[in-house]
Amino acid sequence: MDQQALIQTLSNLPLGDIRYFSSIGSTNDEAMQWAARGVRDLSIIVADQQTAGRGRLDRPWFTPPATALAFSLILRPKAEEVAHLSRIVGLAGLALADAFGKLGLAPQIKWPNDILLNGRKVAGILIELTWAGEEVDCVVVGVGVNVAKGATPSTDVLRFPAISLEHILGEAPDRIRLLYNILTSFISLRPHMHADSFMASWEKSLAYQGMDVRVEMGADQVIVGKVSGLEADGSLKILDEHGKSIAVRFGDVRLRLFA
Ligand code: BTN
Image (cartoon, rainbow, N blue to C red):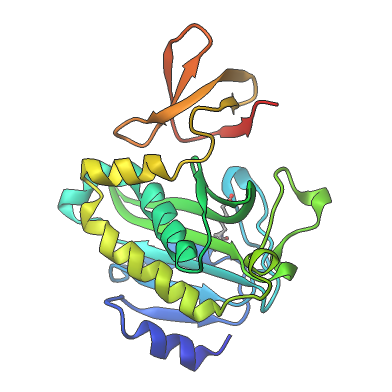
């Protein structure tokens, strides 16, 4: 990735500080340390390669050089955002969906943190928090996108089928332009995070709406039912076989289509 072009393109956005690494362990690890040192809102770390990228549930995240988009955006929540922090994963999901939409694609958000194209995972979001006593100090929004074919891990390390933008578009889009579009959408949607219209957009983008799914929580709890939308806090609503609505909260959760 051309560092100069990256900095120049991102300088058109109202960001905090920008850091670029040609190779790093994990941009989220770096962001968590940076956040603890009092960085500005909307500071960002971008890496061409990660050698210890992390996904949800302690899974590894594969980021070989020159193939993927990997970045961590640091938010310092404003007072009015504190009540809606659980919606930030939706904000990131919608920003990604919006940017993929600009490429002529029809993405869906697989709750809580995956973006799907043609039913396969093209991007993932990892949200982590830093604390100041009882209060959230920073929210780190880590995003990984499979841009070129080489970014998709081999099937033996996958728990869910993956795809890249190149697989669908025939060529890999420019990563800097893609990042610019994701950040532009993120910044413009952020002030609307509290609104019902924001939740409606998130719900509209959800994968598996009305379909039978299996939700595994922790080691031994399983729910089977139909996806029926989102709660105000972003929890997933499942209608079980007895017609009872169950709210599935963020955490140790795995969602699959019920085959
Ligand atoms: C998931 O699907 O489980 C989330 C994947 C998040 C990966 C991104 S890549 C940039 C940032 N740094 C990391 O170590 N992880 C996130």
